[in-house]
Image 1 (tube, one colour):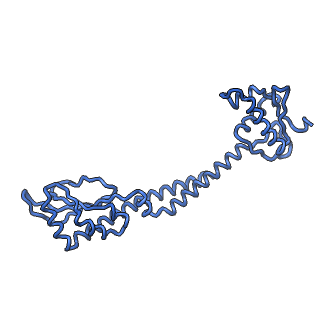
Image 2: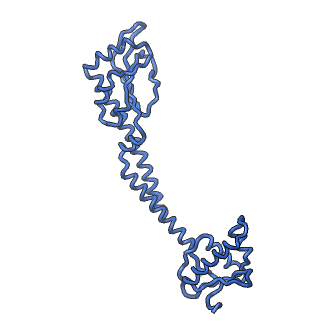
Image 3: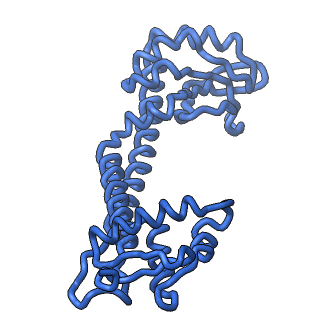
Length: 261
């Protein structure tokens, strides 16, 4: 029974991670598409050409003048306020000149050749965006993975509660009647005490032994023991045919009710 919610949990997590990665790739492709549209616009060519005057070989420049035109070409709205375009001059034998780190980056777009002192170079452009984690998560469409995750956690919680309920139900093996007896829901400490009674000779325990087992670090636990025994006696007397009696003020014994009548 545990296997099914675990498999559902793992499948939901896997689907969520996959959807998140696909959303990031979708955003990267949107940057690529907007960048290609930007350089294809004839109205922007003069702006790029003017920017080349401020460029030196290998220097990266952010195109602030083209920001508005670039943003309006993005189809994913969460990218518009966090994106920008950078441009630099590269020699054909140069490696990647862009060193900026961003959450999402487009491919490097080689635009056109430019004649500069020192040799032929190419104009390279790259777009960057830093959307928030929540923005990517929202774009990734996590309804199914999230629903599966919630269902799996609810199932696991239900199984844990059922397991604990089953573990905290007890019928004294030594004192159980011949007919099937309804299980009694006990707290962990009550269950521990019942197990001590079952294994003790004559089902009898001294107060000192009980206090040492249940409250080993507590000073003067006699009052706590008295309240604890009273509550357990009430539960046993109303739900079973067992009872706990006090023997000479020093011991407690687990007995059947018939023995006390």
